Image 1 (spheres, one colour):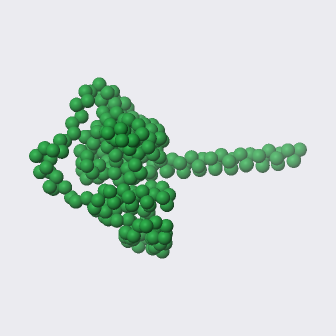
Image 2: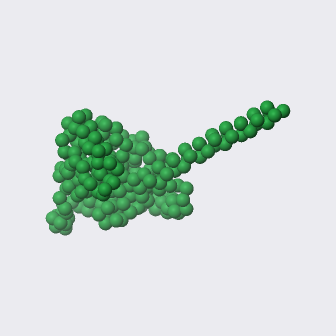
Image 3: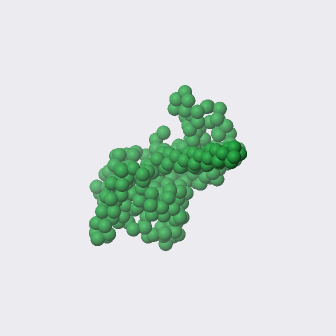
Length: 253
């Protein structure tokens, strides 16, 4: 009799431990979703990219939707233009689309217009929003309403600045020169940052890595700066071979 009671007690604690472990895993996943963010270039969709096979799927340019390589389908993302702080909530409609590694997402002309992005330099900040919050529930409703309006709107309802106009040429004079760096990672110890620099030099052909001290306990490893998008993309593709999870592109660091 005592043996059966002990067996029941042991089984109860074992199951409780498993449940707690599962709960911890769920909490970890939730925290990851809430904290995911990335700053870098977005690829603005056009049919020419599809014809040239630089992107594997079409996207409706009238919608507030994006392609992303890692985020779950139907996730909601806040996209911000760091230059003017304008932002919009968009929906990830696929994570299986192929496009160049340099870009953190594929966006539509509608998003370019909403954020007043420079179409030649579409620099954006992405933040994943947890779908468990009332905030995203409200935004999801707004997203669906805007999508219905956009689908009924004519194609020429989206206005893109004519890059050949005199007005645009005047504005281009005031644009800051192209200057970006690739953020590899932040480290607590300087020794760790220095080890990362050694690894980059030993395992790649990249020679422009550097450490930037942000505080006594924060050391950032960067590649760059780059004043040409072609060189930036070449270096980005090469550093990607070391399998870093969340490389970012930072402006004027």
